Image 1 (cartoon, helix red, strand yellow):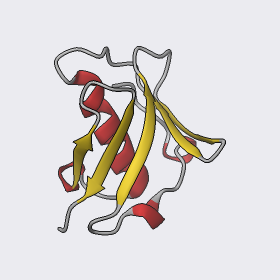
Image 2 (cartoon, one colour):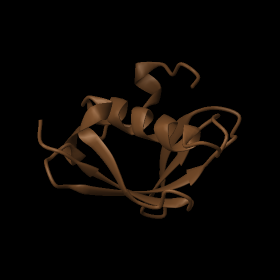
Image 3 (cartoon, one colour):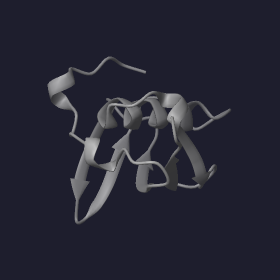
Image 4 (cartoon, helix red, strand yellow):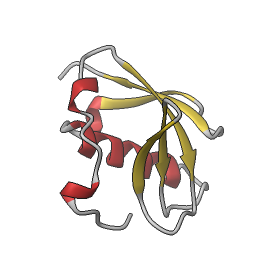
Length: 92
């Protein structure tokens, strides 16, 4: 996963609550890692390929960083093989 400047990330700290579900639309194999909000949908692009869970892990780490929490506090609930995914924040 490519390094992002901290100021390049959306501030998603308001989503970091236990039990909160975060729905995202993912684009793997992108030119760079990014988070954007378009048409009310949180869109995530990652450079990782969609094989062996690499893209899912990259999305989890990027979301956690934007939310200001440890990646271990985010769990992929739905969408392991789909572009639309739902992550849930765990207590911690």
